[in-house]
Image (cartoon, rainbow, N blue to C red; front, side, top):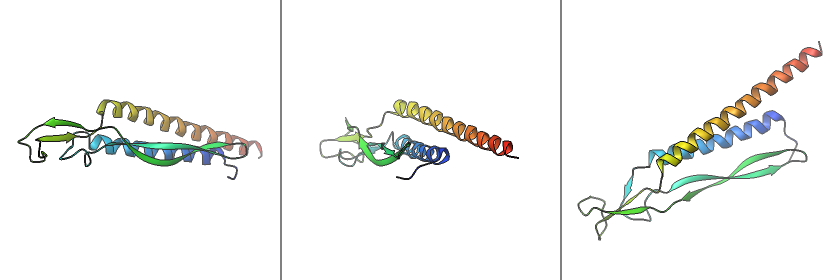
Length: 131
């Protein structure tokens, strides 16, 4: 891997947090969904991150997105999605946990924006010194 600038590293970090935020949004959108079977019930999505190393730098890559959680069944024989035993399956999503993840992700994204602003300011100050 080639050497990366501060801007490259921060950009990759922001991209990773954007993937994380998109999976959280998908999870929250499907939090109350029901299904007729455990196999088709929605499971929370979680990004998997991997460290990418350079000669003297390290950054993050999104290695993939995995499904997590186990759907729970509820006995509702009158529901149109109920299976032969009268069960419906709820999405394996904890909305409270997703909201905490969303706040944490937004803070990490904001911190990276601050890093970019600081690096930009330092680069401009350095250019001004050369005048």
